[in-house]
Structures are given as C-alpha cells and as structure tokens.
Image 1 (spheres, rainbow, N blue to C red):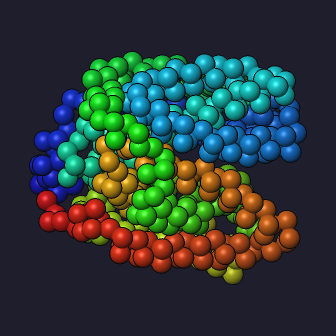
Image 2 (cartoon, rainbow, N blue to C red):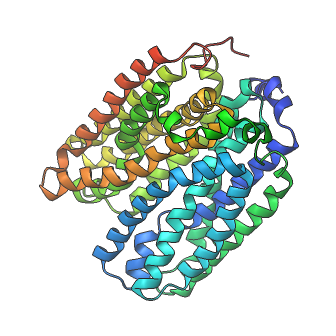
Length: 421
C-alpha cells in the first residue's frame, strides 16, 4: 500500500474517474493494434507485396510529408467541432484505410492506402491530447500525460508480441490478417470512446464569442512561447526519435556488424524501462521546471548517441551490453519528455485554440520524420556513417540550450513550478 501511495499519490488516484479510465483503456487497446504493425511498413511492401525498396522507402517519406501537411487541418477541426467527432472520424476512416492496405497489390492501391493512413493518423494524436486535457484537473495533467505514455508503450509491447506470433514472410496471408485485426481494433477503440462524447464536443461559449470565433492560426503562430517550444522540440525530435527510427538499426547492422535479431532484444530494454520507470519519474519531476526537465532529456539523449558512437571502439562482447544500457538511458529521457511537453502546450493554450496548439506541437513529429532520414542519408551515402551518432547527439545537446532559453518565456505556473503534491 505504501508503494502504491508513493508511485500513484492519493490526489491523482482521486482524479482517475470513469471518463479517464475509459480514455486510458482506449489508449491501451488502440496501441495494441499500432504495435502489431509499427515496424512492418517497408517489410510489407518489399518482402510481401514485391515492390522495390526504392518505391517502398519513397512512399514512406511521402507519407510522412502527407501526415505533416494534414496536421494543421486536424487542429482546426478539433477546435471547431471538438476532439471526439474528429477522433471518431479518424478512427473509423483509418480502419477502412487499413482494410485497403491489407489487400494492396498494385502501386496505385498501395499509394492511396498509404496516403490515407498518413493523413488519417494525424486525426488521433492531437484531438486525443485535447480530450485528455479536458477530463483531468489542470494540476494533474502532467501526471495524466505520463501515465498515458506508459500505456502507449505497454500496448505497443503487447501488439509486438502478437505480431511476432502471427506474421510469417513465407505466408503473405498472415500480413493481411494482421492488418485486418488492426482495423478491427480501430473500431473497438471507437466503441470504447463513445461514452465520452459529452466531454469531447465543441465548446458553445467559444462559438458564441465573436472575438474567439474569429481567432485561428494567426494567433497561434504569434504566441512566442509556442514558437520557442515547437522549435526546441523539433531539434530534440530530430536528435532523438527521428534519427533513432531513421538510422539506428542501419548503424547497428552495418557499422557495428551485429545481427539484425539483436535490435529487437535492445528495444525490449526500451519498452520495459518506460513501463517500469514512468510512475517513478513522474514523482521525481512533479513541481520541477518542465522546460529544464526537457533540457535534461536532450542531455540524456546526447549520452545515448555518444555511447552508440563509442561502441565502435569496444570489443564485440561488450557492444550489446553497452547498447542495452544506452537504450535504458534513452527510455528514461522518453519518460521525462512525454508528460512535460504536452503539459506546457496545454498550459499556455487558450481553450478555443487548444486543438491548434496541440497540432502545432504535433508537427515536430512529422517534420523530424522527414528531416532525420535526410540527415542520416547525408552521412551514410558519403561513407561517414561512423560520425553520424555524434552529429545527432550534438543536435540533442543543442535542444537543451533551446529548452533553457524557453524557460525565460514561461511563467512559473506554465513551467510547472508549483508545490509538489
């Protein structure tokens, strides 16, 4: 009981009402489906459907751009119609796109399905963040975002286990089954969320106020705090998630000469660390400067990349252990980042522009997913891949400087500097 009180304080437990429990269940269920197919995009197109690697990777990059372009539209729709209608539309349509993706045979059907998945995927993250900010008290948002991130990773982990048990490259039909299951999961998520429609509708007061109704992206972009946060987060994302997804596996296999099977083992430490450490980290950062916590993430991720680069000088029998330790450090940074960035943006966002503010922060994911592969290709195509980890680590460290500068533009309240519960 004492351990429970330490990890999940009483005031937060009292805020876990029925709507929040339902939201958390929907997060977990949805991410099981996402985890099933998270890393199979290029494998599915190339190894299962027989498309060239050039076409497969180009389509992946084009999808990132399409998702990026659609993000502001989803933000505007969220403010106008409320997060729930937007999420419902996104989830149902995404389920249909997954069915089309499951049976894609030709180039045209693959392109259409991929574009739909990319565009529709943007209609879940921002609105979900907006909805979560509505159903928890303001003082509990940071902790609520952190617990949600833990459930995201737990769901992805379970989905990955399910995927490993189903897919077989020698039986293409297993991939069709996998994507159809994912489509069903999207519909199940909709059913779970339906009772939250009262919390997720449009705010009548905002539409009745002519001044608020007239405000839009011009006011969002004019907020210097948000611009500073988005810029710092973008550099951090390129020096973190974006580059990890774009080149980590490539570096491990080609530069460190390790088996591809080692990668799954290393990432097991990532997911496990997030699930085990998230509640403890939430307690440690409560009441501390959010911008400085995010600056700490940049430092931790620099250490991660430095350890990856230094692994080139280690004996082979020490490399895997070093990479596992580095991945634990990266994961701790993730547990610090997930609650703080979302908490800041929802603290500074006016209610009638909250969807746009969350969409603006969400842009950092799309831009980093586009920019990081270009940076990775620059190093590996010019045969200087051994220097890539240090360059990326330098970006992570630079983001820490930008985060410290962000502190000057935030009030103590916005930065989370209040008495820890």
